[in-house]
Length: 206
Image 1 (cartoon, one colour):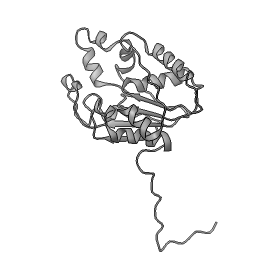
Image 2 (cartoon, one colour):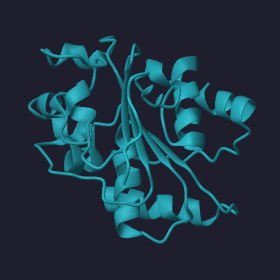
Image 3 (cartoon, one colour):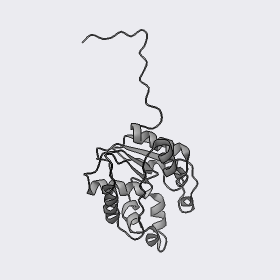
Image 4 (cartoon, one colour):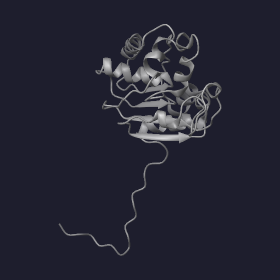
């Protein structure tokens, strides 16, 4: 639904990137993503990642910084840590269920930042409907799998919280609209309104 909406409403040509997170390391995934980007014949290439896919984008740009210009949107990406992944890892065979890439990126707390010139916008959800609630009891706003606080990443240009669940954001028309807004304009929602000058204020002389 996200792909269809962005193609129909915004005219984007969509290239889906799939990967086996349970079998590959994040480095291998990042390198494969670089290969997909390199094959796109376009002057501008925007990148959109859902959940662990956002971290794949982050690692790809770290390993392969020479990419075409464009903006990036993370959707429900646990940028700093994942309480759900840490809870799953405590079960027998939990790390095997998570897979190599998720084990590398989601366990413990990571001090990540967004150092890239590409503008990054982050979408988080606060509708707690997901299987993640079966293994972790959040005490703050969350999308059922990832807490809103876990999605924040220093260096991002914009962060927005929408009433969607972790999986539901892929089906949401509002999320698709906000993704398109950021990719095109570099902000979510309407552009900021400049303050209205006071009728009693006077211009200051240099």
